[in-house]
Image: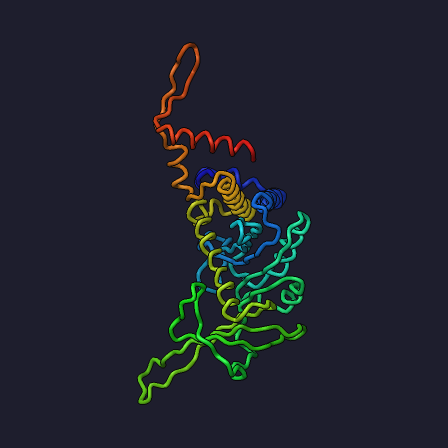
Length: 329
């Protein structure tokens, strides 16, 4: 990946064809990684992120109150691959485009013989059309609190994390709910005891509720813990921003930046494929030190040019194994 300051003039010449082309390559590499892993059923995690920028006539004020541009991402949980990337204005609602994203990813997976088994997303995906589309899939979507009567839940159990440790002050129960134009579905509801900010005589408390909509057969506690695994895609986005130069945008041209975003996702996917093939799962920075920051010199020996590397025999064997693995891609 070249630095943003070095590639702006090249990217400024790009158009919508390059945006679609780089996105297609990004998806092809993600599919290849899934196939290489041997997985046939996958979990799809959807999330959006903002890149804060004040580029004139380009950035818009987002709902968080600052000028930014937005990226709608989609990740495959089993391989950590980015299978969807859409660059858009910062003032667009995070709920916009999620239905189209789901259809796009489902189609590309189906065309390659891969089943989209689970769909996980935050409250932006709490939409009737998405829930209806997931009838033959298992969805885990954070529900919005409006229109839900939590008083009907008469059975509450202690909430535990995925290691079985109980979470203080938290309980979990379940109920059934339906949106307009949808069939009924389950709600796994957690409640947390909260105290009022103002001191009072009897120490009265109130509950803060958090619900996850699902059509799965898992217990409420299992639903809670499986949904929370979606939080790892926040780490993938952080990796994209810090390791692949997405904290800043290279130009003031929208299409150019869209190509840049897709190129970053493409390289990110190549690294995930590299990790799968070689068994080396490191950050980009540590990988540079492992493969490239090696002392060496070119010498002429018996009429041949040789590259002499200063490394141990074990390090050299690892280096050769990596090269051999890469040639099989």
